[in-house]
Length: 277
Image (cartoon, rainbow, N blue to C red; front, side):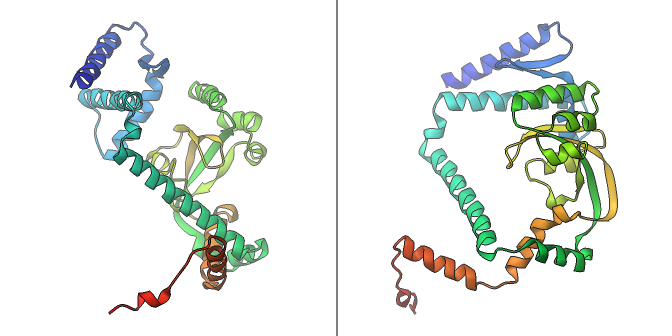
């Protein structure tokens, strides 16, 4: 009870301090991290669109205090060792196990089936209509190695810098740098789940990120516009084709790999015991 009381005391004091601030460009400061009006407004408007809501003063306050409450609850939970509670620890471990299995299976399948690029290009050329999409999102991007650099670049973009010029100069993703920040035309089915929801709810000219993605880049994205009835590029279709070609090859190679792993790990199996009534 004392912890809950302290939490709401902090929240109340925060509310008072926000009302007394003289800086009209700041919505709140938490643990030294400043949330500007412009950044907050982008997240708030995106939330409205994602939930089909109309702007109001009450919703602005609700979004603010919900966002801040989640930050404080997380910090409070870490401080109190919530992650060590058996129920929480089991959920974290279950998610960790599931993620490792999914990633390892995907990588292993690609290794044992070893689809060559020529086969992928041939399939793309002969089946291009499979990669026609009704709506695509033209995305520009800057991808950087450090969060500090990404935050600095994001601030420049928020203040009017051109993302294509910035990407050409600063992107550590060489392909993006060469292409002056022009990433590709993405359909929803090939977007990274990390930023898919934001982009699908976004509007041309809006900037999102940075997202720390699976390639270990801090990625900032601008929606440049939309395209309709266009094909996915070969690069974006590539993983879809790989998955399709693997699925058409049957299970023989996978079964061989499984048997090797059974021997390597010394698993003991008695299939006779599956014959129950």
